[in-house]
Length: 194
Image 1 (cartoon, one colour):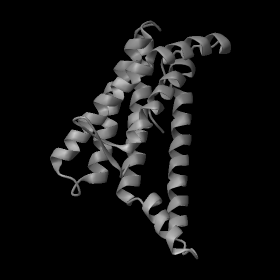
Image 2: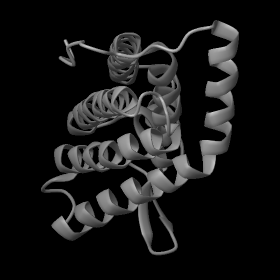
Image 3: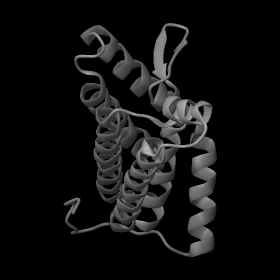
């Protein structure tokens, strides 16, 4: 996240190249198994990310015998708590939003038009995710213009990324539903995230 990459006119974090895949996986899980199972996966991933952040912080804090390794670990694994909190909050809120919207759209569309659900849930979720992360992690560090530019760049490009992967997503969902013999519709459920 702390490494910025310029791709044409876009200012991106290096994390951009992996985080949209989380939304693809979330779309697949919510489409097949429903909102409740997807929320369990979101909470499990959130806990794993928090634990990994704590483990890396602890390992970096430990005084090692080799200064070169200590310095390299500090360079690679040190994150400000703002970045950690921003990442965790953005992931949790964005993925929850994505799953809830997709689930509600599936019921409203009676299971038709998966493409519209996948894109319609991801577009606002990507925007909220990147905006929340940028505000928490970089407010006061970056200019407001850089925060806005990064949020718009990453959320737009994440949606394009997901659009490019949609043919694969569609085939996985179709095959998985057939193999599992399941297609959950979340009628009359609570969308409370807890």
